[in-house]
Image (cartoon, rainbow over all chains, first blue to last red):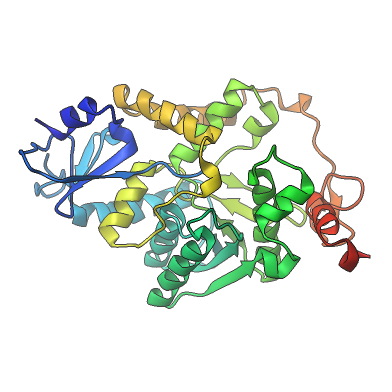
Length: 47
Length: 312
């Protein structure tokens, strides 16, 4: 599945995160493979 | 997805611009665009001294990095708010800011609110009973007061903050929901200087929060990931989340919302300005900063309440 589909599956708004895999930034169309570890960095700040 | 400039694998995709870029071209594009906005909104020139308000967060450190890369005379100002929240928040953010400045040999001014005024922000907030149990109102008051004081006292021409497009859109959204016309009339990339008040500018006002996060990650800038412990449940964060949901299905909605607002206000057909009573400002008898109150400014009144013995 793509990163976008994976985010939708776990109800994370794509605009609110940046995803990295093995230290590299990946985009919505990136195909994820079984066993991939994807880090989600929250972008919203402030208060 | 491929970089529009060179065809290499893209690291950042900006749907609002229909533009995807690789790391190298993105790290060039951000300062180029910043320079474009600095000129477009006449924020400052290379001859002027810029004071950048830095918190240790991604936007302010990213901004400082960009301004230095563009060759501007940019020094930093860090305000130590004395917020712990169980995560040593202020210490951590100060350490990150100092490390950033040291690595680049940049001048950083540090003002510790507790050392300067006797109490940290959370205690000042309790003493003042201002802000419904959260220190955010007192924090904002203290930051604005101190940023202006340092800019004015040390002769800086302009104060720059790291407000990004998401910040601006969230504020605009909140003020539109309540039709706060006085705030709507003032919001924008530049607040001109007036008696005693330094010019304030937001060079990142057209970059999405996501873009600034990407910039810092790709530049290897270490910033504080944790939010202020008091930020949980805040209105502005809620509005940002709502706007991001809108943006997901309507790419560019946040940018259009902000830019069309600025254009409409400039055309003058949004609000009738003469109906808004302007506050009459005079100099506070204690600190000399402009205030609309009859006597001491809100900040000095708060300090008198916090330090009744030393004030008499």
